[in-house]
Length: 458
Image (cartoon, rainbow, N blue to C red; front, side, top):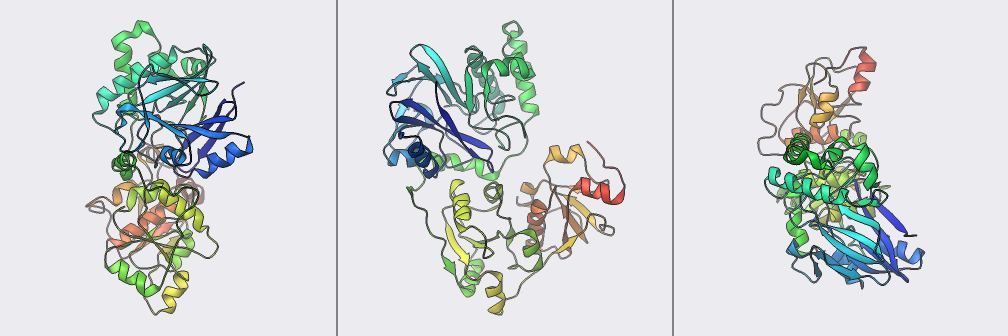
């Protein structure tokens, strides 16, 4: 029986896989930048990572195939990927003996033009298919990242139909899943089977009906396009990083250098981005003026990639007990290698050096009277329920040129679902010159419970 292990990045919503494909040999599919989880998993099961396969040029994380290849694996990647470093170009219909199992390449464009899926065969019997973004639980991955969305979605329709022709019992191992901005489903399963997608998902069930013909393609395309929301800004430039190859670090990671307060002040004056990764309450109490609040948590990398300029040096502010390794890895996995270091001694050292700090108020959910509420959640969250009379602007849009134009004047309470995104939004408003900005503690449900009022929908 085929053994497959998942390595899940909860923050980005993605899965990569380690599969035993031969005597002591493993295949790694769509690995993240840090090779250590795959090496550790391989060693734990008496395997060697002999192959690494990329399904497509990723937009949401730095591909780790080059890292795994640098440690001895053969790197398989789409021939159309345009990679500028060594790899074995794979094409539709190609087969390769992995030392026990065989891998068959399936062209499945849609999520990206060069996209491939990899079918594992034990002799003539299919035993697994790794589908990247061509087939995921609940649909297909978004089709608007690499050009006009309509033709890409129609290509995704044809790719999905081809995959649905595989045996119903075949396990499907996608890369994108719940929590990924490439996935239409915020919740649900990370793996599936061909049969389950045929019968349990209306979108893909329609795609499998031969009788639908052009009408089926049109309906599928309309449904996919209607479900596309915004996505992080770094999706626009990270594919070029993956094509040329990000710097390799192997089994080590660069240290997070300590920077004296005066040096941090100089870097900030020269245009560096200061990201305060402390919890919301600590940032609210005192922070470096102009810094951006992005609390260190699984979603840190996503919001860093959405809001920070990768060309500018990045300085972080942390509390003593926070994990520096987690912070560094979060930066690296979305292509932020220009990490200057951290404020040595934290905010206390900044204050001890006689440098000014700023603060932001925290407002209980029941005490927003007299303040305009600004809701920075995603459009779908807003439509599902919001405070009557509140203004709405997605958090990612606040960092766009002119993103703060037209927002409420006067006292503002920024809100999200829990407070972290609201703190980020409040910090962006303050950096843009807003003077009376606070963070609403809690989300719309907390407000409704505290006030006894009803939320608006739509």
